[in-house]
Image (cartoon, rainbow, N blue to C red; front, side):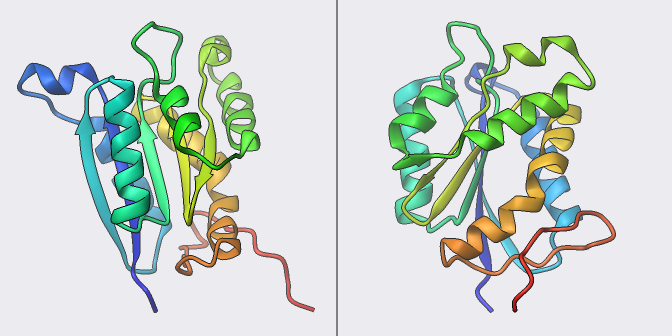
Length: 177
């Protein structure tokens, strides 16, 4: 079985300011470790809120590092420096708007400001790119909502088979006839 490579990108200007503890990227890694029972390898990077840097990172992870899934955190709000969705849309062949819609709907159960979030998702070649918010609690809430569809999406793209701990998260895969 092929070991899945999963890109994890933290977008934050604080990262380039010196000492920085990336609790958001770690929250993604911890969540994926909870979900996945199959072997996977993180391809991890912390980068500044610069659209060209985000685009180059996503392209490299998808095209050169063979990440079947790339998960970003940060840069999805309404601030002028929040350009992760624009970078994602610029590098994707096709967009997957249902991911952002579901994440916002889920987040609205907890905070009314979820409507300010601009998470999105799209496909680049053999990679699914998903934008998450920056707060660890929100990361888990959003991943809990959308992750059940991710293994089957990767299957449809002929990527590695992601096995999950079904006591934690139940992926949806149609039953074979």
